Image (tube, rainbow over all chains, first blue to last red; front, side, top):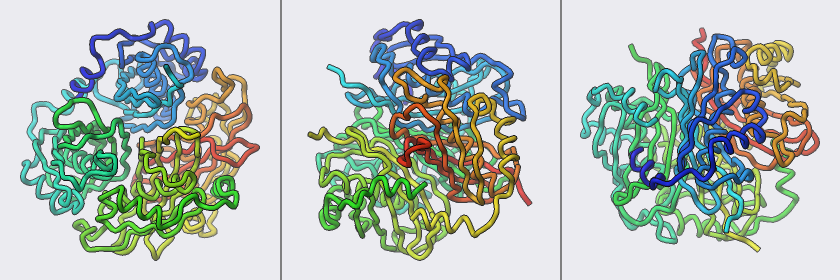
Length: 152
Length: 152
Length: 152
Length: 152
């Protein structure tokens, strides 16, 4: 199934913006993501990988990473996966986001992998899986919609 | 990413119920799914594939398959993916479901592929992708939670 | 809070289509809703009330009403609340729907009350609460987005 | 409809923890909410009102308040509405959250009003509406589930 999705989106095409361009959009455009230190690792046409480096400030009592930190990471990862197909159109805005928290995230770096499920003329839909850097089992899943600016 | 998920759930283990047992649960337990003709195709430990055979009654004006028919298919597919890890515990109940409709589904058979993202003691979370039988591009995506009965 | 929402949407304006027009759209446009017998009770500008009359076919083992029947009712109620502000534009399509199932619904008639949270140029967002006809406590909650056709 | 919900939850009962206790849980338990300055305004049995005071750091390009700031506010408001019925059980954890972003939030203080839709033995479900402090029209809506620790 996932292979079908990836193949159908990928087409061997390149991302329409560079990692450094996307990083600049994140850092300038989402102050909370900048504060948290979200880092864009890689972009392909339709997919994006980001990292949230561990900092003690991310912890909540019990020693797990707080939900809003993961939500911020997923939001930015999904935005990156959409912009990888559109180029640097900062004006795409989130219209909905759904999160499922699967396991309590242990202290440590988090990875987010997002993929575009559908790119339409007016809407793009993408999902994201968050894992620990050291363990491929999913800790959180997000899916959401972006409203796209008018294009030619 | 998806490979990580699949591998971490699969462990080369067998589904804890047979296709015919799951089909009986669907037919007896979800009257709308029985009316629509949802068919269980295959089960592995943590995943399930189902089919919704085409019937003209599924169409809405414009010639696409109606949303509630796809929602019913996805609900039953997610339930099947969860029970593949638990066995025939009819009492698992849905607590939330989120759908994204990606493309208008053309008239024709639909396939649903569901996978368990997390099986906990009290909750299971799974997602599902619906495609046309003849095209691997996703038409709809669903993700949801099941509350599990107490186990030993 | 809810008062703020209702007042801000309502403006003492009338629904832009009649109950009988909306009923015809439901009956003709959503075959599953017609099969289930969903009935439009009332429309105001921004809100809609619908009924799902009880039938034994709606039950699942355990004697509760099946999830897909409630999802179909909520989908149609949200569509009605959006069209109450737009008039009979059959082409509005659901892009996402999120359901939370709160209590097991006892056998009996169900009521759905939907309200538009936001009507934009391209998207409308609405939610819906389902109750038993005889008890005001919510049994299910749904929220979703409709993509609107181009308007002048 | 909303009246039915509020009345059925409220029963003229008092919140099971004080505003200052809830504020301490937020400040100590959700580092991002503390950084943002989320403030608990009032609690009743089943409902909670919170404020996110405006700070220029919350803005994103275009002069609107960033999505993750609103998500953090809503998460904490929903948690507060649930704990108002349970008392200070820090261990309730979010299992899912769905956000709809309705309008771009203008620079200024934001208010969040959350209400518990259902309190079960193992799960609680609540929703939240965010508005500007100066305008009752909703800017964002959230709904989610909390898994509750075992109780006697």
